[in-house]
Length: 617
Ligand code: M6R
Image (cartoon, rainbow, N blue to C red; front, side):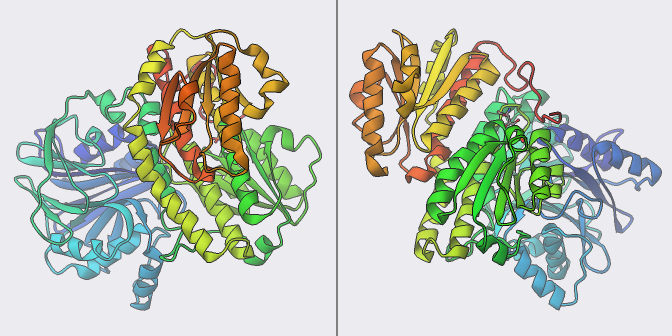
């Protein structure tokens, strides 16, 4: 996600710009595709911004130096609304006089209606971003007091956001605000800082203040004032940062993978943001395929690789159930070599975190050549696969740095479900009430994920205990089958342990021969409420392998007592409708792999022989 830095004050030998540029460099790990700074000097706001890496911004600052200043804000942008261009980079200006500059992390859900109002007021826009709407609103609301203007504006915004603003008439002041998006304060001597995390200022101070939800902070060199969105005085939570700079980048986690696993509630929540209206109806203004064409779709083919393909396998269950459109899932590298039956009524959905996977890209091009409608589910704005596709539905997981995909997987499933529900809405295969019920349940998932993540201590103990295992098997059924495959993939790729995932029903057709005394087997158990008695069948599978000596590690819903007699270990997940369960059941398997690989002393984030983005066929 975007990186944010704000600074007021002076440290010996450095300027506000130096401090902010240093902070942006420390926030590079968050991933970004453009960067910019703004500072207050000589009664004006001066700014510079560039698409691409910080080196481009640095060069622009050499070519056209900004004046010295003691007040600055800086931003690294991970594109959401609008591609990664100079114009869309932050800061954004507000007002005709350009005296106000604003940076933003998050998504302003109601930006479209706000922008319509601003356009009707005659306000012009220089970018495609939701952020510029906030900048223009702030300029409209400003009457000499930047904090008060911020308070007016945040109460009109919906969604998740961190905002930082400076105004030419308020030198020595930076105002920040947060809702559902991070912002921390760094307290210095005659200087203060704001950052999306402590890495932004760890080179200068270790005294931090955690802001609460819906709070506004105003910093000057000598003061830090916090109020709520209602204007009432508020308190932050002071603490001392004990991490070193490297740990700070990882938010105190031992690896990026661990950090990204912890970020999953946000990945799901952010991917859901702005995709439904108050009544639970899906609103996908961003899709560029005509509704009429979507109504005519006769077949959906999902193409992807690795973890993204497993997300597609999960999605197939839901999409077919909700839309009654046949849906197949194919590894992208197999798709174009087998003469697939695709025509203009086919919808080919690619899933890719990076948007650069060559196998998936080539499959999308092939689908285009065959005349299909192509839709990309992708986490990376401006990447190649969305550009080659007719339409794109972005996941908002934020940058994923660890090679092993975790939060992107959950975001991919979430986005696929949004697509499935949208198609069901268009084609009338689900009622409005049914759609509202499912979107409500999806909205509950982030909270359940947080609860689940807080209860992973036993999983970590099991992982450490199993650090020397030579082989681990994973069983699942229905949507639990791709979860089993994903659990096995995680273990293989980061712990280098032989691992296999199977459909539980397939056991008796071969894999059960692998079971010998002590063989660890994870079993992803469907909810007892799952149709067709599936739960009972999986419980029988557990009995069958346990009778042959397997050590059974059972992932089961809270309150499912049927599994208790046959489980050597039970890992509980919160109850949720069957089709949404993969968003929860995969988490213990991610945590298990991450902890086990760490216990083996391996580089969890950069496993051997693998690259984050596979850009060759
Ligand atoms: O960037 P993509 O989502 O297209 O990448 C696809 C796979 O290469 C990726 O999911 C890979 O399997 C991960 N390393 C799994 O953790």
